[in-house]
Amino acid sequence: MYAPIYLDYAATTPVDPRVAALLGRHLTLDGLFGNPSSTTHAFGRQAAQAVEIARNQVATLLNAAPREIIWTSGATEANNLALVGVMRAQARRGRHLLTSKTEHKAVLDVCRWLERNGCTVTYLDPDPDGQIPLERVAAALQPDTVLVSLMHVNNETGVIHDLAAIGALARERGILLHSDTAQSAGKLPIDLQTLPVDLLSISAHKLYGPKGIGALYVRQQPTRVRLEPLLYGGGQERGLRAGTLPTHQIVAMGEACRIAHDEMNVEQARIQRLRARLWQAFAGLGTVVLNGHSQQSIAGILNVSFTGIAAEALLAALSDIAVSTGSACTSANHEPSHVLRAMGVDAIQARAAVRFSLGRFTTAEDIDRVACAVTAAVNRLRELSPLWEDYQRGVKTEVDWGALP
Image (cartoon, rainbow, N blue to C red):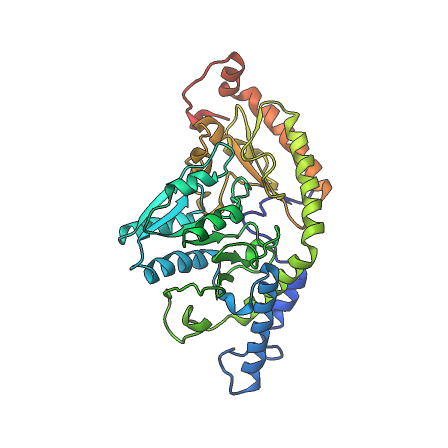
């Protein structure tokens, strides 16, 4: 009997055993369990030192200065601190924010809140391949634009945005650029000494660290980015994020970033080969559509629509294979993906889309098993599907998704 296969790395990654071992050593009496703010005794000072080592490891991954790394509970909090913090701090300068319709809900929902609290937000449409053209960004900038927030890699399609060009444009206009890099940090090279990004969100659980810890990069040079904090209390993290630091999670995140820094190139090349192998198998089914850019995409995400069937039916047929229909944060919502619809994908193709996301522990044997299982399931479901029959006859029908197999 085969073990289940996990191909939902874009939702979360398993903690690397090397990271888990280190995390455990910062919890108990015989480890470094102290409060990093308790600098009057050795327990606290040792914990504080461990926190700063981890801060350096995160900074090294991003080629940033350690003092520019602020600990948060994850990328969602980092996004909130970046967007709300900037718009509050820069309120006298302007109240306009620019983002895209394909952002994660952790950005889009913050933007909706800002709109209810006096800000104006422009939501850019992507091209059909998911990319945001530079000229579209330029045309949307206004005299009172304070911030542009565009993710580095889309969590559903894997499409990579050109942060270098967008950041250069924003910097020419004196506008800040924030990027959610939850899907790219540790997978794509990020050099903040050259990349004109002012704020950057990162999450440990997307790069083989634990859930519940992340960081916000806040540029200090050549000009310090001013933020208003969301949390007030003990003044931790230079007054930008109050709360007792979770040493065990921070140390684990640092180790995850160290491993990613050292192994990124080899790991991503291997994952890219596995992704190509999986796509080649799917393409053999015919009328399978790649959602996203064919070249400007990250190695670990493959989003495809299997014409003629509903994605939910395919997932039900693959009970021992973990894949998804899109973002984990919206998986309970049965509406078509907001990302795919913003790209102009029609409702039928959007409801047929499945995201396969590969990672560190994915093997060639996994890929071959998934390819075989998906091929068999798609062929079987198409035989039962009235939508597939209509497609073959060239008939475009209104879809009752509840009636589809």
